[in-house]
Image 1 (cartoon, rainbow, N blue to C red):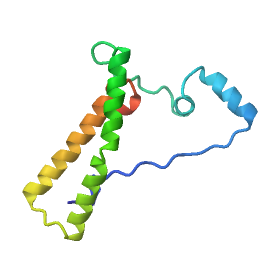
Image 2 (cartoon, helix red, strand yellow):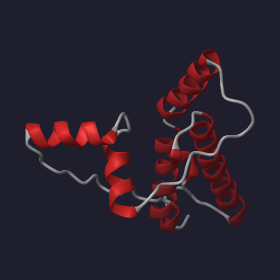
Image 3 (cartoon, rainbow, N blue to C red):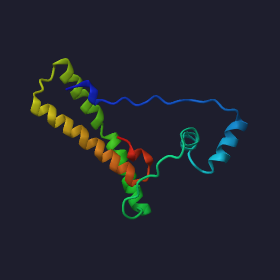
Image 4 (cartoon, helix red, strand yellow):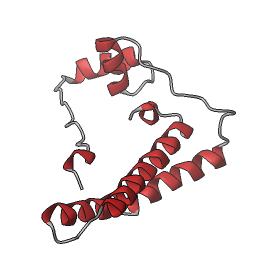
Amino acid sequence: MAAHIIKRRVPPFSLRLSPEERKALKEAANGLPLGTYVRSRLFGPLPEPVQVGRAATNGEFQLLAKLLTELGRSRLSSNVNQLAKAANTGTLPVGPETEAELRSACSDIAVMRAELLTALGTSKGLRR
């Protein structure tokens, strides 16, 4: 299995602010998360989250958030990563059919995550 399938997360960027600077930044953000506000000031307006159909009720929102949490806890990505490592080191023989199935599984997991994030109204659901 090719190593280019695994996308690395971009490391976070930290910025130290004085208490006064942070207070001013929070006030200027007007309720937006600080990271979102800073990005919008640096790079212009960010795309709005895609709104598909009607807005989720509070119960639906909580269920979607729980599903996303369970997807993260399921260790699917860790298990797929272990399979990829075993395939790359030769301890797991992988033919073209198995590789295609693993790629399909990775894609399905990514789609589930993106759709859950989009349904929750986060702009992260737009990435891919």
